[in-house]
Length: 511
Image 1 (tube, rainbow, N blue to C red):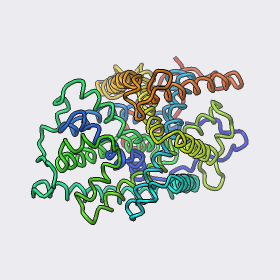
Image 2 (image 1 turned 180 degrees about the vertical axis):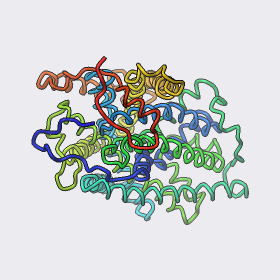
Image 3 (image 1 turned 90 degrees about the vertical axis):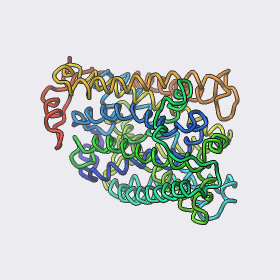
Image 4 (image 1 turned 30 degrees about the horizontal axis):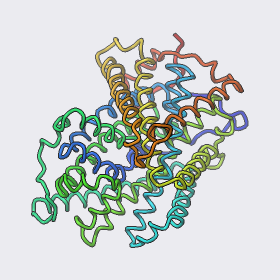
């Protein structure tokens, strides 16, 4: 879909066909940071549901798959790097679209610093520099340096970024497979040193631990899949842009499911539920504890798995935020300079460096408050993530509303599925707000204005977004002149009948 470009760069756009399907798939996988995500949630989930942790991870996959379907079909008719921002604007109007775009940009900016910090910490642990991890200045300096380096790679070019990501995902998956194989071998050999448990198919039952525990587990589990949509944010730079990015997003959720279930089963079987529950508060460092027990002197393998996971995600998480800001600037929903594209590298250099700058500032400021405050800010991300995913699911059904009854396939995959996914995520969003309202549920255990710090952070981010939106609306009303529309019948026909090749793109028709 063609949009008006920034007026001072009329002939410069993102580089088309820079990457292929496999590259997009890899970027979608790395954006979720599989090893890091597993390390961060496996202990808390086991503490809630015990041996049924793999089942909860499987249940968490369901809303992600349904929302991935929405991304796939919306991308078929609108190949815009702003994804949710562009789609929601076309389906539900500029106000909802702007808020969706704001949520995406802020999730990227807030999480990059934490990812880089984990990458630095685990790399130092892997090479035996444990003392550096405890040195706040050294760790934070290296974290900022890593953010700058990975941002530079994003600016230099999408092809280079894809090559780096391909290497990192291969290392990460290889390290995780070694860990899984050795852990399961030692379980069946009886040499774990823990109260190990032989795996059972019953572990895949998400309802085994009961309703309340399932709800808490899902709140943790659903967000380990977050990030796969980075593949779709590269739609304007991907070959077969109408189909490949959406397929990459769908397949990445499936690959993640297999990876998460394999590692979760191996960890629960090897360490047992008691150890994992007792150490749930250690978050991602629980893998650092298990590395030596499983692999002995080869513990650096698992440490590097988490490190490479976080390094890769540091880079790929910048992509959705920067591309969304670019898309918003092109539509005059943000100041024009955010839409600047490097004539040399054909990447959104200004918005990319802005994301990095905000990420660095947030990381350093929050660290001055406390390490717990950084974790609380990450918990607040769940609110933003659930919001824009749910918004995308609803937008899919709304945009295709005149075509949902044309076939059973349309009704299930474009209408019912995304709406159910949005409903599940809305329910999780409400549950998150309820849980976060209690200060005792935060990492710090402190109260901010009578609420938990994560909820306060989420509310502040939302209010800042609303204020900025209103200010920009008063300053430049061009974007707010756009009106919601419906999917072009010709494009819908192409979507449901020619799914094996690139589709056309164009603006939706007004109601």
